[in-house]
Length: 134
Image 1 (cartoon, rainbow, N blue to C red):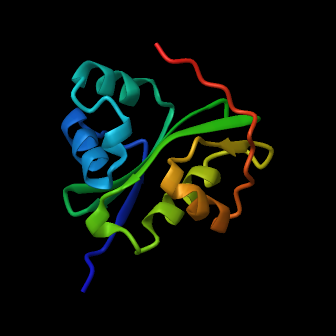
Image 2 (image 1 turned 60 degrees about the horizontal axis):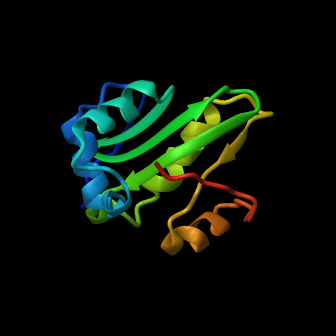
Image 3 (image 1 turned 30 degrees about the vertical axis):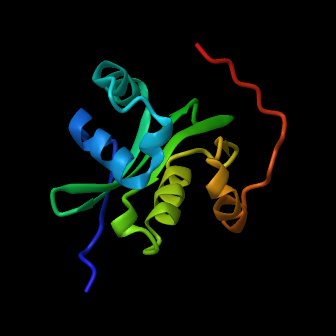
């Protein structure tokens, strides 16, 4: 029997909890998980964090930066592999959208393996993204 998932809006998340869920979701492969200062900055400067908890354990996170009216960039969507296939990612996105004005677009850059996941959730592919690397 699956444990109950509790969702929280802008609840405190520690750097260690963030680190662990990134690694447990495989998103850690594409995030600076060994740089705790960067992870702290990622948490501190996001203005919308929806988290999913099984008891005291963080099992999912949707971390966004948004003006809440026009654009919301969903920077990280991570669900621990052991908790996947339960609708947690879908619920994290739904709760993120619920915090935004109806006019606000949700924008993200998908990991290559996640393209079909987002398509199934109703996202439209856009090939006009540009990224600089430090």
